[in-house]
Length: 292
Image 1 (cartoon, one colour):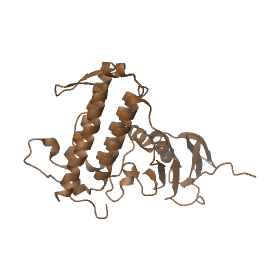
Image 2 (cartoon, helix red, strand yellow):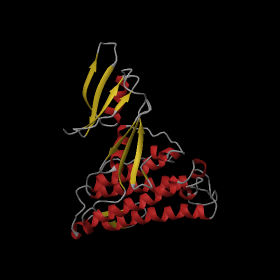
Image 3 (cartoon, helix red, strand yellow):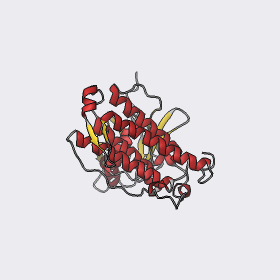
C-alpha cells in the first residue's frame, strides 16, 4: 500500500468566483466540477503543474481559512507571473510576505496568496541557490538579483510612514528625497536598462512610464522589473565575449556601454541606492519597524 498524493480542500462560498480567481489570476487549470443539482453545492478540482487543490461549497468540507504550502523552483519568478496576470497585493505593513517574496529565518524564501474566501497558498523555495546561471551574462544577472534582494531586505524593514518620509526636501535630485523616491527611481532605471538592451537586440517593446510607487507597490514592482530583465536576457546567458562587446547600448545620459558594462552599471546602481537608504537609517532620518 502506498499514498499516491495528498490534496488540500478549501472551503469557498461561491464556486464560480473561486475557480475564476485560481484559474485567471494564479494560472490553475480546471480539472473537474461536480454538483448534486444546478443550485446545489459544488465540488471542483483545479491544478497547477499537475498538483491539485480542491474547492468545495459542501457544508461538511471544513471551514474557510485553510492553508496549503506549495514548494516551487523559483518563488520570485512565479510571483512575477501572478502580478502580470493581475494579482493584487494587500499592502499590509505587518505582513510583508503577502506583498512580495521574503527570505525567512528557516531557510525558505516565501510569499503568501489569500484567495477571496481567506484560504492561503504559501509558495516557497530554498534561499540557497542550487545552481548558478552559466556564462558572463548569467553571472551578472545572478548578481543583479542579489543586489535587489539586499535592497528588498532594507525596504521590508521600513513601515509605510518611514518609507514615504521626505528626508531631504532641498536636494536638487528629486529621486533622492525619500526611500520611496529612491526605490521608484531604481525600478524605473531597471526598466530603462532592459529597454535599452532590447533595442540593441532589435527586439524593442514598450517600457512602463516612470511614476512614484506606493508603499505596497514598491517591492512587487522591483520584482517585476527583474523579471522584465530576465525575459530580455533569457537564452543569452552564455554570449561570447565578441557578442557581448558588440552589443552596444547608448544611454540617455550620453554614455555608450557594451552589454557587460551596462549590466555592471545596473548592479552597482542598486547597491549604491541601497546604501543611501541604509545611510538614512543610520543617521536617524528614518527608522526601521520595531523588531526589524
